[in-house]
Amino acid sequence: MENGHGELPRPTINIGYDGHSSQGASRKCGTPRTNPGAFPTFPYELNLANMDWKDIHIALAGITLVSFVARGLGMALQAGWLNAKPVRILPHVIDTLLLGSGLYLAWTIQQFPGTDAWLTAKLLALLAYIGLGMVALRRGRTLAVRLLAFGLALGVFGYMVVVAVTRNPWPI
Ligand code: HEM
Image (cartoon, rainbow, N blue to C red; front, side, top):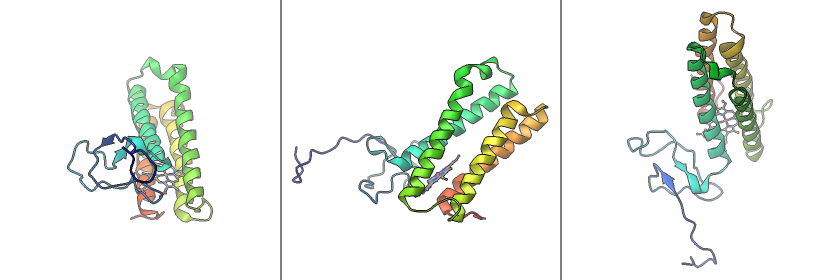
C-alpha cells in the first residue's frame, strides 16, 4: 500500500527492536537500547533492513572481537587451523573495513583523527590493538607473553568502545 508520499512502505526485520523509530538522516540505529532486558541482550538495537554505516561499523567491531577471541582460544589450544590461509587473511580484511568505515563515519560527522582527540585516541588504540593482536597470536615467544598481549588487546578494545560512546579520550 502506498503511503501518501509516492513510496511503498519498506519491510523491516528487527532484532530486539523496541518500537522506537530509528529511520531518517538523524536516526540513531546503533544507539544504546532502551529495553535492555529484552532478547537478545546485545546492547545495541540492530535493524537489519535499515542498516547504515554506523551499524556496519559496530557490526565490524563485533566481528573483529569474536574473531580475535576465537583465534586467542585457538592460540591457547595450539590449534592447527590458526595457520589456514583464510584464518590468516580474513582478520586483515575485517580490520581494514573497520578502519575504512570509521574514517568514513568521521568524514560524515566532520570530525577527524588529529583534530578531535577522541578520534585520535581511537585510531591510535586501533593500531595498538592490531599490534598487540599480532604479539598475542603469532609473535609472542612464550605463552605468558601471548596471554598478556591478548588480555591487553581486549582492554584496548574495551577502551575503544567506551571512547566511541562517550566521545572522550579520557572516559574515566
Ligand atoms: C576496534 C575498533 C573500533 C571499535 C570497537 C569501534 C566502536 C564503535 C562504536 C561502538 C561506535 C558507536 C558509538 C555510539 O554509540 O554512538 C562507534 C562510532 C564511531 N566510530 Fe568507531 N570503533 C572502532 C574503530 C574506529 C576507528 C579506527 C575510527 C576512525 C578513526 C572510528 C570512528 C568512529 C566514528 C566517527 C563514530 C561515530 C559515528 C556517529 O556517531 O555518527 N572507529 N565506534
